[in-house]
Length: 382
Image 1 (cartoon, rainbow, N blue to C red):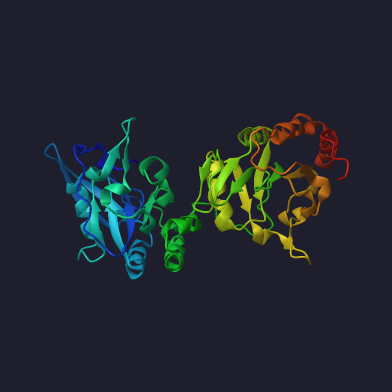
Image 2 (image 1 turned 180 degrees about the vertical axis):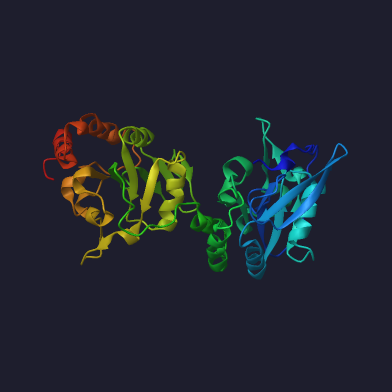
Protein backbone atom coordinates (compact mmCIF):
# COMPACT_ATOMS: atom_id res chain seq x y z
CA UNK A 1 0.00 0.00 0.00
CA UNK A 2 1.09 3.62 -0.37
CA UNK A 3 2.95 5.22 2.47
CA UNK A 4 0.37 6.88 4.77
CA UNK A 5 2.66 9.89 5.11
CA UNK A 6 1.63 10.82 1.58
CA UNK A 7 -1.81 11.89 2.79
CA UNK A 8 -0.45 14.28 5.40
CA UNK A 9 -0.29 18.00 4.49
CA UNK A 10 2.94 19.68 3.55
CA UNK A 11 3.76 23.08 2.15
CA UNK A 12 6.46 23.85 -0.39
CA UNK A 13 9.16 26.33 0.51
CA UNK A 14 8.93 29.87 -0.87
CA UNK A 15 12.67 30.65 -0.68
CA UNK A 16 15.87 28.70 -1.09
CA UNK A 17 17.17 27.11 2.12
CA UNK A 18 20.67 27.87 3.41
CA UNK A 19 23.40 25.52 2.17
CA UNK A 20 24.60 22.83 4.54
CA UNK A 21 27.63 23.58 6.74
CA UNK A 22 30.97 22.95 5.03
CA UNK A 23 32.31 19.41 5.16
CA UNK A 24 35.52 17.77 3.93
CA UNK A 25 33.71 14.46 3.54
CA UNK A 26 31.95 13.09 0.50
CA UNK A 27 28.15 13.19 0.69
CA UNK A 28 25.69 10.29 0.54
CA UNK A 29 22.10 11.49 0.11
CA UNK A 30 19.46 8.84 0.81
CA UNK A 31 15.75 9.02 0.11
CA UNK A 32 13.63 7.69 2.99
CA UNK A 33 10.27 6.21 2.02
CA UNK A 34 10.40 2.97 0.03
CA UNK A 35 14.16 3.39 -0.31
CA UNK A 36 15.32 2.51 3.21
CA UNK A 37 11.96 1.89 4.95
CA UNK A 38 8.49 0.52 4.25
CA UNK A 39 5.49 1.87 6.18
CA UNK A 40 1.91 0.72 6.62
CA UNK A 41 -1.12 1.73 8.68
CA UNK A 42 -2.13 -1.93 8.83
CA UNK A 43 -0.22 -4.47 10.91
CA UNK A 44 2.14 -6.30 8.53
CA UNK A 45 1.78 -10.09 8.22
CA UNK A 46 5.34 -10.60 9.44
CA UNK A 47 7.67 -8.82 11.80
CA UNK A 48 8.15 -5.06 11.84
CA UNK A 49 10.92 -2.99 13.43
CA UNK A 50 8.93 -0.35 15.32
CA UNK A 51 5.68 1.61 15.31
CA UNK A 52 4.68 5.23 15.84
CA UNK A 53 1.45 6.94 16.84
CA UNK A 54 0.21 9.44 14.25
CA UNK A 55 -2.30 12.11 15.24
CA UNK A 56 -4.40 13.76 12.57
CA UNK A 57 -7.66 15.64 13.09
CA UNK A 58 -7.64 14.52 16.75
CA UNK A 59 -7.56 10.88 15.62
CA UNK A 60 -4.68 8.57 16.47
CA UNK A 61 -3.48 5.79 14.21
CA UNK A 62 -0.49 3.47 14.34
CA UNK A 63 2.23 3.54 11.70
CA UNK A 64 4.20 0.30 11.33
CA UNK A 65 7.76 0.64 10.05
CA UNK A 66 9.96 -2.04 8.44
CA UNK A 67 13.63 -1.26 7.86
CA UNK A 68 15.23 -2.42 4.65
CA UNK A 69 17.52 -5.42 5.28
CA UNK A 70 21.13 -4.37 5.69
CA UNK A 71 20.27 -0.73 6.50
CA UNK A 72 22.36 -0.41 9.67
CA UNK A 73 25.32 -2.20 8.08
CA UNK A 74 25.01 0.01 5.02
CA UNK A 75 24.98 3.23 7.05
CA UNK A 76 28.00 2.14 9.07
CA UNK A 77 29.85 1.21 5.85
CA UNK A 78 29.16 4.70 4.50
CA UNK A 79 30.42 6.32 7.68
CA UNK A 80 33.54 4.13 7.66
CA UNK A 81 34.19 5.21 4.05
CA UNK A 82 34.19 8.86 5.28
CA UNK A 83 30.81 9.87 3.85
CA UNK A 84 28.50 12.28 5.58
CA UNK A 85 25.00 10.79 5.48
CA UNK A 86 22.14 13.06 4.48
CA UNK A 87 18.52 11.89 4.34
CA UNK A 88 15.96 13.68 2.20
CA UNK A 89 12.20 13.43 1.89
CA UNK A 90 9.27 15.59 0.83
CA UNK A 91 7.09 14.41 3.70
CA UNK A 92 6.50 16.33 6.98
CA UNK A 93 9.43 16.74 9.34
CA UNK A 94 7.26 16.13 12.41
CA UNK A 95 6.70 12.48 11.53
CA UNK A 96 9.83 11.66 9.54
CA UNK A 97 12.11 12.88 12.33
CA UNK A 98 10.53 10.35 14.69
CA UNK A 99 11.34 7.57 12.24
CA UNK A 100 14.92 8.73 11.70
CA UNK A 101 15.45 9.07 15.45
CA UNK A 102 14.51 5.41 15.79
CA UNK A 103 17.02 4.47 13.07
CA UNK A 104 19.79 6.65 14.56
CA UNK A 105 18.86 7.17 18.23
CA UNK A 106 22.25 8.60 19.23
CA UNK A 107 22.53 10.94 16.25
CA UNK A 108 25.96 9.59 15.33
CA UNK A 109 25.19 8.26 11.84
CA UNK A 110 22.87 10.70 10.05
CA UNK A 111 24.58 14.08 9.65
CA UNK A 112 21.72 16.11 8.14
CA UNK A 113 18.00 15.59 7.57
CA UNK A 114 16.54 17.46 4.60
CA UNK A 115 12.85 18.09 4.00
CA UNK A 116 10.63 19.79 1.42
CA UNK A 117 12.58 23.06 1.33
CA UNK A 118 15.45 21.24 -0.42
CA UNK A 119 13.17 20.19 -3.26
CA UNK A 120 12.65 22.12 -6.47
CA UNK A 121 9.12 22.49 -7.80
CA UNK A 122 8.91 21.71 -11.51
CA UNK A 123 6.43 22.96 -14.06
CA UNK A 124 4.35 19.78 -13.95
CA UNK A 125 3.67 20.25 -10.22
CA UNK A 126 6.19 17.63 -9.23
CA UNK A 127 9.04 18.24 -6.81
CA UNK A 128 12.58 16.95 -7.32
CA UNK A 129 15.47 16.81 -4.90
CA UNK A 130 18.02 19.45 -5.97
CA UNK A 131 21.57 18.70 -4.88
CA UNK A 132 22.74 22.25 -5.63
CA UNK A 133 20.60 23.58 -2.76
CA UNK A 134 22.81 21.70 -0.31
CA UNK A 135 25.96 23.51 -1.42
CA UNK A 136 27.71 20.19 -1.96
CA UNK A 137 29.99 19.54 -4.94
CA UNK A 138 28.47 17.22 -7.53
CA UNK A 139 31.69 15.27 -8.04
CA UNK A 140 31.71 14.37 -4.33
CA UNK A 141 28.04 13.52 -3.89
CA UNK A 142 25.94 10.44 -4.63
CA UNK A 143 22.18 10.02 -4.27
CA UNK A 144 20.28 6.79 -3.61
CA UNK A 145 16.62 6.79 -4.58
CA UNK A 146 13.94 4.38 -5.82
CA UNK A 147 13.05 6.58 -8.80
CA UNK A 148 15.79 9.13 -9.50
CA UNK A 149 14.58 9.82 -13.05
CA UNK A 150 11.48 11.46 -11.55
CA UNK A 151 12.62 12.51 -8.09
CA UNK A 152 16.21 13.74 -8.50
CA UNK A 153 17.36 16.69 -10.60
CA UNK A 154 21.00 15.51 -10.82
CA UNK A 155 20.30 12.03 -12.23
CA UNK A 156 23.99 11.48 -13.06
CA UNK A 157 24.67 11.42 -9.32
CA UNK A 158 21.94 8.87 -8.62
CA UNK A 159 22.02 5.15 -7.94
CA UNK A 160 18.63 3.58 -8.51
CA UNK A 161 17.32 0.89 -6.19
CA UNK A 162 14.07 -1.01 -6.51
CA UNK A 163 11.20 0.21 -4.28
CA UNK A 164 11.24 -1.52 -0.89
CA UNK A 165 7.94 -3.27 -0.17
CA UNK A 166 8.83 -4.90 3.14
CA UNK A 167 10.37 -8.08 1.75
CA UNK A 168 12.71 -9.64 4.31
CA UNK A 169 14.74 -11.21 1.49
CA UNK A 170 15.45 -7.85 -0.16
CA UNK A 171 19.18 -7.45 -0.93
CA UNK A 172 19.36 -4.04 -2.63
CA UNK A 173 21.45 -2.37 0.08
CA UNK A 174 23.82 -5.31 0.26
CA UNK A 175 24.31 -4.92 -3.50
CA UNK A 176 25.58 -1.38 -3.00
CA UNK A 177 28.48 -2.32 -0.74
CA UNK A 178 30.66 -2.56 -3.86
CA UNK A 179 30.35 1.23 -4.16
CA UNK A 180 32.12 1.84 -0.86
CA UNK A 181 34.74 -0.79 -1.68
CA UNK A 182 35.74 1.02 -4.88
CA UNK A 183 34.94 4.71 -4.33
CA UNK A 184 38.34 5.55 -2.85
CA UNK A 185 39.91 5.05 -6.28
CA UNK A 186 37.81 7.80 -7.89
CA UNK A 187 38.19 11.57 -7.60
CA UNK A 188 34.73 12.07 -9.15
CA UNK A 189 32.26 9.64 -7.54
CA UNK A 190 29.95 9.98 -10.55
CA UNK A 191 32.47 7.88 -12.46
CA UNK A 192 31.53 5.00 -10.17
CA UNK A 193 27.76 5.37 -10.15
CA UNK A 194 27.52 3.13 -13.24
CA UNK A 195 29.01 0.22 -11.26
CA UNK A 196 25.89 0.22 -9.09
CA UNK A 197 23.49 0.51 -12.03
CA UNK A 198 20.16 -1.15 -11.30
CA UNK A 199 20.47 -4.09 -13.66
CA UNK A 200 19.41 -7.71 -13.47
CA UNK A 201 21.99 -9.92 -11.77
CA UNK A 202 24.68 -11.35 -14.00
CA UNK A 203 23.62 -14.70 -15.38
CA UNK A 204 25.68 -17.78 -15.88
CA UNK A 205 25.19 -19.97 -18.92
CA UNK A 206 23.00 -21.59 -20.01
CA UNK A 207 20.15 -19.07 -19.84
CA UNK A 208 16.87 -19.97 -18.12
CA UNK A 209 14.72 -22.08 -20.48
CA UNK A 210 11.98 -20.52 -22.60
CA UNK A 211 9.50 -21.69 -25.22
CA UNK A 212 9.93 -18.46 -27.17
CA UNK A 213 12.26 -17.83 -30.06
CA UNK A 214 15.35 -15.84 -29.10
CA UNK A 215 16.80 -12.67 -30.58
CA UNK A 216 20.38 -12.01 -29.49
CA UNK A 217 21.56 -8.44 -30.05
CA UNK A 218 25.07 -7.07 -30.04
CA UNK A 219 25.41 -3.62 -28.45
CA UNK A 220 28.32 -1.49 -29.70
CA UNK A 221 28.03 -0.39 -33.34
CA UNK A 222 24.93 -2.59 -33.71
CA UNK A 223 22.41 -0.76 -31.51
CA UNK A 224 24.47 2.24 -30.44
CA UNK A 225 27.59 4.23 -31.21
CA UNK A 226 29.70 5.83 -28.52
CA UNK A 227 32.15 8.71 -28.46
CA UNK A 228 34.78 9.40 -25.80
CA UNK A 229 36.07 12.87 -24.96
CA UNK A 230 34.39 15.86 -26.62
CA UNK A 231 30.65 15.40 -27.30
CA UNK A 232 29.46 14.96 -30.89
CA UNK A 233 27.06 17.46 -32.47
CA UNK A 234 24.13 15.25 -31.57
CA UNK A 235 23.78 12.51 -28.94
CA UNK A 236 20.90 10.89 -27.00
CA UNK A 237 22.47 10.71 -23.55
CA UNK A 238 25.83 10.52 -21.79
CA UNK A 239 27.28 8.29 -19.12
CA UNK A 240 30.37 9.30 -17.19
CA UNK A 241 32.30 7.12 -19.62
CA UNK A 242 31.11 8.27 -23.04
CA UNK A 243 28.47 9.94 -25.17
CA UNK A 244 25.99 7.49 -26.67
CA UNK A 245 24.06 7.71 -29.94
CA UNK A 246 21.13 5.35 -30.44
CA UNK A 247 20.88 3.80 -33.87
CA UNK A 248 17.83 4.91 -35.83
CA UNK A 249 15.13 2.24 -35.65
CA UNK A 250 16.39 0.58 -32.47
CA UNK A 251 13.23 1.23 -30.46
CA UNK A 252 11.04 -0.15 -33.23
CA UNK A 253 13.24 -3.23 -33.58
CA UNK A 254 12.83 -4.07 -29.90
CA UNK A 255 9.07 -3.62 -30.08
CA UNK A 256 8.59 -5.57 -33.33
CA UNK A 257 10.72 -8.48 -32.08
CA UNK A 258 8.70 -8.59 -28.87
CA UNK A 259 5.41 -8.48 -30.79
CA UNK A 260 6.65 -11.40 -32.94
CA UNK A 261 7.14 -13.51 -29.84
CA UNK A 262 10.90 -13.25 -29.45
CA UNK A 263 12.74 -13.13 -26.15
CA UNK A 264 15.42 -10.44 -26.49
CA UNK A 265 18.90 -10.98 -25.06
CA UNK A 266 21.79 -8.52 -25.25
CA UNK A 267 25.02 -10.41 -25.96
CA UNK A 268 28.03 -8.11 -25.89
CA UNK A 269 31.78 -8.50 -25.52
CA UNK A 270 31.78 -5.36 -23.38
CA UNK A 271 32.13 -5.49 -19.62
CA UNK A 272 29.06 -5.14 -17.40
CA UNK A 273 30.26 -1.89 -15.80
CA UNK A 274 30.22 -0.18 -19.19
CA UNK A 275 27.26 -1.88 -20.88
CA UNK A 276 24.72 -2.12 -18.07
CA UNK A 277 23.94 1.61 -17.61
CA UNK A 278 23.62 2.00 -21.38
CA UNK A 279 21.11 -0.86 -21.57
CA UNK A 280 19.21 0.73 -18.67
CA UNK A 281 18.76 3.88 -20.74
CA UNK A 282 17.97 2.34 -24.15
CA UNK A 283 15.39 -0.09 -22.73
CA UNK A 284 13.18 1.90 -20.32
CA UNK A 285 10.24 -0.45 -20.97
CA UNK A 286 12.13 -3.60 -20.00
CA UNK A 287 11.77 -5.42 -23.33
CA UNK A 288 15.25 -6.93 -22.98
CA UNK A 289 14.93 -10.13 -20.95
CA UNK A 290 18.59 -10.98 -20.29
CA UNK A 291 22.03 -9.41 -20.57
CA UNK A 292 25.18 -11.37 -21.37
CA UNK A 293 28.52 -9.61 -21.02
CA UNK A 294 32.17 -10.34 -21.77
CA UNK A 295 32.35 -13.15 -19.24
CA UNK A 296 29.82 -15.09 -21.37
CA UNK A 297 32.12 -15.01 -24.41
CA UNK A 298 34.97 -17.33 -25.33
CA UNK A 299 38.46 -16.00 -25.97
CA UNK A 300 40.36 -17.34 -28.98
CA UNK A 301 44.12 -17.71 -29.41
CA UNK A 302 44.42 -14.17 -30.75
CA UNK A 303 42.73 -12.73 -27.68
CA UNK A 304 39.44 -11.87 -29.42
CA UNK A 305 36.12 -12.50 -27.67
CA UNK A 306 33.91 -14.99 -29.54
CA UNK A 307 30.16 -15.47 -29.02
CA UNK A 308 29.07 -19.13 -28.88
CA UNK A 309 25.29 -19.43 -29.04
CA UNK A 310 25.44 -23.13 -28.19
CA UNK A 311 26.46 -22.21 -24.63
CA UNK A 312 23.25 -20.24 -24.07
CA UNK A 313 21.03 -23.32 -24.00
CA UNK A 314 18.91 -22.01 -26.85
CA UNK A 315 17.98 -24.19 -29.82
CA UNK A 316 20.04 -22.99 -32.76
CA UNK A 317 17.11 -23.42 -35.13
CA UNK A 318 15.05 -21.06 -32.96
CA UNK A 319 17.48 -18.21 -32.35
CA UNK A 320 19.24 -15.50 -34.33
CA UNK A 321 21.82 -12.86 -33.51
CA UNK A 322 22.17 -9.41 -35.06
CA UNK A 323 25.81 -8.33 -35.03
CA UNK A 324 28.05 -6.02 -37.02
CA UNK A 325 31.10 -8.28 -36.47
CA UNK A 326 29.66 -11.55 -37.75
CA UNK A 327 33.13 -13.17 -37.83
CA UNK A 328 33.15 -13.22 -34.01
CA UNK A 329 30.03 -15.36 -33.73
CA UNK A 330 30.78 -19.08 -33.81
CA UNK A 331 27.45 -19.98 -35.45
CA UNK A 332 27.68 -17.73 -38.50
CA UNK A 333 24.55 -19.24 -40.03
CA UNK A 334 22.58 -17.60 -37.18
CA UNK A 335 23.94 -14.09 -37.79
CA UNK A 336 21.86 -11.39 -39.43
CA UNK A 337 24.76 -9.30 -40.64
CA UNK A 338 24.59 -5.51 -40.62
CA UNK A 339 27.06 -2.70 -41.19
CA UNK A 340 28.76 -1.07 -38.18
CA UNK A 341 27.01 2.03 -36.86
CA UNK A 342 29.38 4.99 -36.53
CA UNK A 343 26.80 7.64 -35.66
CA UNK A 344 25.57 8.34 -39.20
CA UNK A 345 22.16 9.97 -38.90
CA UNK A 346 21.19 8.60 -42.34
CA UNK A 347 21.78 4.99 -41.27
CA UNK A 348 18.92 2.62 -42.24
CA UNK A 349 20.35 -0.80 -41.34
CA UNK A 350 17.88 -1.58 -38.56
CA UNK A 351 15.01 -0.54 -40.79
CA UNK A 352 16.19 -3.18 -43.27
CA UNK A 353 16.49 -5.76 -40.47
CA UNK A 354 12.75 -5.43 -39.85
CA UNK A 355 12.27 -7.32 -43.12
CA UNK A 356 13.42 -10.45 -41.27
CA UNK A 357 10.35 -10.32 -39.04
CA UNK A 358 8.10 -10.04 -42.09
CA UNK A 359 9.36 -13.37 -43.47
CA UNK A 360 10.59 -15.41 -40.50
CA UNK A 361 7.24 -17.12 -39.89
CA UNK A 362 7.57 -18.91 -43.25
CA UNK A 363 10.54 -20.93 -41.99
CA UNK A 364 10.64 -23.75 -39.46
CA UNK A 365 14.39 -23.26 -39.06
CA UNK A 366 15.26 -19.61 -38.42
CA UNK A 367 18.70 -20.16 -39.94
CA UNK A 368 16.99 -20.51 -43.32
CA UNK A 369 15.28 -17.16 -42.75
CA UNK A 370 18.66 -15.64 -41.82
CA UNK A 371 20.20 -16.98 -45.04
CA UNK A 372 17.38 -15.48 -47.10
CA UNK A 373 17.63 -12.07 -45.42
CA UNK A 374 21.42 -11.91 -45.73
CA UNK A 375 21.14 -12.61 -49.46
CA UNK A 376 18.42 -9.96 -49.65
CA UNK A 377 20.88 -7.56 -47.95
CA UNK A 378 23.48 -8.52 -50.55
CA UNK A 379 25.74 -10.35 -48.10
CA UNK A 380 26.76 -13.38 -50.14
CA UNK A 381 29.94 -14.10 -48.19
CA UNK A 382 28.43 -15.48 -45.00
